[in-house]
Image (cartoon, rainbow, N blue to C red):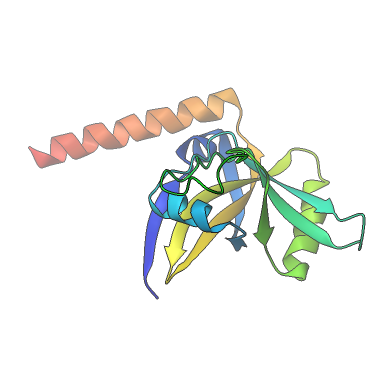
Length: 156
């Protein structure tokens, strides 16, 4: 399987502590696929919400707040295009039920961490996360700076 990473949600990984990860498909239109494959997707500030469909009672996962700009070369269908519209994620029913139960707990949220292509399909890695406190973020920065200094000293 050939995989190539399109984008990573670095801000989300900094602000949240990852507890569990899942792989999900994402439902896109044709021009959106071309835009995403060219790397023009912004995941910062986006999250995943689990909703129950009122018509048939099925549980669905939706990506909220991800920015996919309109494809430049597809002018005909992009007149009423909304870059920040909600997009449906494709997960198994068992995974959706599990995530629905987990998001009911206080302090847990689901964020997209990675978008990549697997063969010809666009996949998204989502993570069940817990928000970091301010001192946890400072500790992460200190560790990162320490590792950089250590690598610089070892290179000399």
